[in-house]
Length: 115
Length: 114
Image (cartoon, rainbow over all chains, first blue to last red; front, side, top):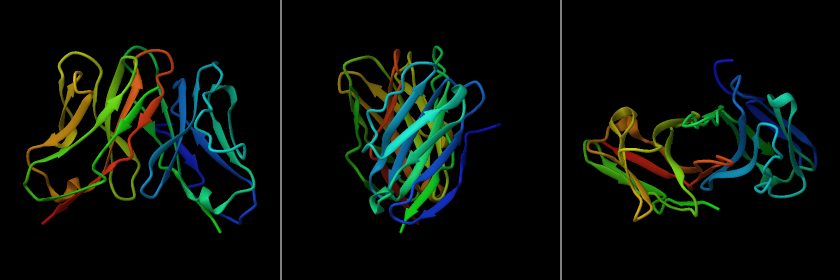
């Protein structure tokens, strides 16, 4: 596609339920990032995939959070047993990582509300 | 590891006045530097970037930033702001090799007043 696509755009879930957030990066982009944006908290790094390397999971806030990237393309962020503090906008970005082509392109985000 | 500090969480400024949004970074390796802008209810888009060469970089909408290696800063400036510049601005760094992981600051909310 022309840009990074995220789905759903909005998700309301009950506390304790599991949710899956999807990201379709720009075709050919080797790097994929997930960030969380909470009110007044800026962009919190969650996880980073780069090609076939092991993902950098250093930003995942708890073991309830996990992500995978299938076939080097689509990524799914899963939050198990959601809590109210998980409410935020989850942003996905992708980029090339060749030479100076490192600009990250962002999707519109998924707004997650845990009630 | 890298870190980014944006000391000003909010900056109010009158229309047509100049503005500077501050960004300082910390890194043990060489980095690329970026400013992203997020307009209300929109996604993030790249404003400008410093990769190498001239330390003064120009971006979209009349913004510019200057890389100062000795002060580890990358402040964003605009000589005359418009109402339409009201947005949140994020400074970011990424390594020049290896992981290329982006680290963002907490953002500065620019509010342009009429």
